Structure formats: C-alpha cells, structure tokens
Picture 1 (cartoon, rainbow, N blue to C red):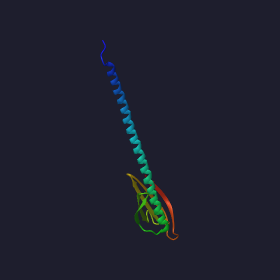
Picture 2: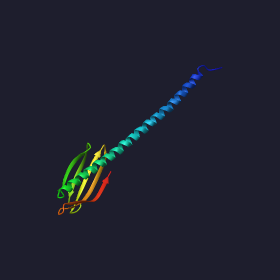
Picture 3: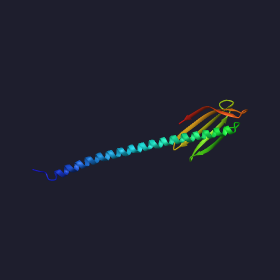
Picture 4: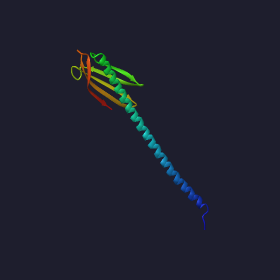
Length: 135
C-alpha cells in the first residue's frame, strides 16, 4: 500500500533543509563582510589620525624654525578636514630644548607625536633631538 503524497512530503523536507543551509551560509557571509568593513574603517581612521598628528608636529617645527625664541603656545591646525591640537613648551625637558606635542583624533582613533628639539637662540638653529609617535 502506497501512501499518497509521500514524494511531495520528502521533497518539501529536502527543500526546507537546503533552504536552512543556504540561509545559514548567507548570514555567516553577512557577518564576515561586516567585520571586514569594520577592520578597514578602523585602519583608515588610524592612518588618518597618524597623518594629521604628524602634520601638526611638522607645522610646529616650521614655526620654531622661523622663530626659535617662541614662548609656550597651543593652537589647533586643520589638516584635510581633521584637526590637530599642537602644544609647544619652551625650555622643556631642559634649557635649550623645546617639546612639541601634536594630537589628533579621527573617528575615535587617537594618535600623538612628541618631538623634542634643540634650540640655539644665538645662532637661530633648531634641530630634532627625538621624534616619538604614539598610535
């Protein structure tokens, strides 16, 4: 005795199982794509914040080269739509040396550059003693 509609029932079960497998693979690929995009945006933000911080430090070095007797100052500089906060501290860490700190934050990624420069006010010479980047 044959059960009516048995072939249709097994076909329906097979289609449901295959559909569930396809849906699982699709959801997995969606999560992986989202994770890879997040990693890409994070990397881009990190590189951008580092570039903005370096630009701020280089701007401060240019200002010190033009005016080695510059006193303590803080200012913001816009670089490519982002902002670097720059601080120049005269006589730090010791006499005849100045410290430049430039910080930038892009999409939550913060970078800082600290530069210690030597300054000779008699000859108006400025030279880099150390350059330290902090991602």
